[in-house]
Image (cartoon, rainbow, N blue to C red):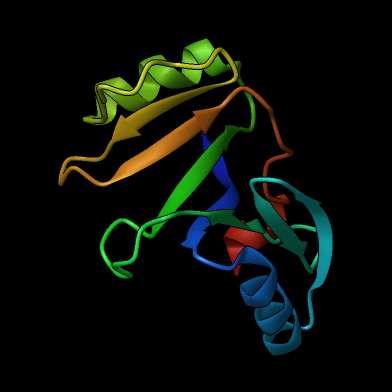
Length: 126
């Protein structure tokens, strides 16, 4: 069993402005937007970057986290595997579509219900 990064989530005071900036930098395009922020995407297997609106005035710590998506199992099985590897549940109540966990140093990340395809076999041989 494995997971892949499905999204990288970045807190932003102005998601639209940051989305446009990173699209220009990376050659990505805006692929979604709503009241919470902006999503940008590039290469087919590259993670989506989500710029999520925040009221925090202090940039830096806690502005980035990973959303992991199971590749060859369901969310429940992957949650059990991550906990066995040393992840810990946080005080954030699971939504049903994601669980918020922390790595061994306390960095938060989400385990999503959505599955994505595993990397091609030849990727691991490089």
